[in-house]
Length: 178
Image (cartoon, rainbow, N blue to C red; front, side, top):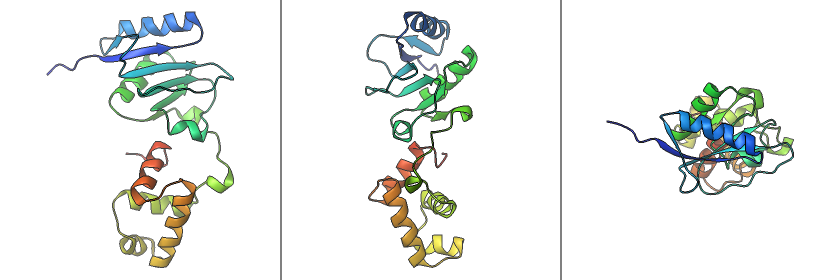
């Protein structure tokens, strides 16, 4: 079964960068360059520029690490100086629904009050597996009361109101890999 090429729009402040990225997209059989109705957006972010997004999933090319508030709004964040092959690989991953965060650009550090502790990350991973509080307590060798305490802290730090929202927020921020 043939998969139709993903429709990609290119956004860049510099016309030469925009033309180069457009040529890269046109040369790949996996993608179709479009101006509107895009399934994906390849966005080149200049230093000092703020991120503004539409509805389509976005792969950002930038020379700076993403801010924690930006991570939940994009599908990928890679350095602007990657070679063509790596840009296309990242775009293909985003087209398939994956989240791409280049290791050289790890997210800018969050304020200490928002950083999850190691134990909270462990608990969050078990939460993502669908375990109940009692099962989590058994796996971690802690009481159910302690599980509830950690969950409350996780909900606050991830600005969520439920287990599902917490797991979703953690996935978007790259705290849990799927």
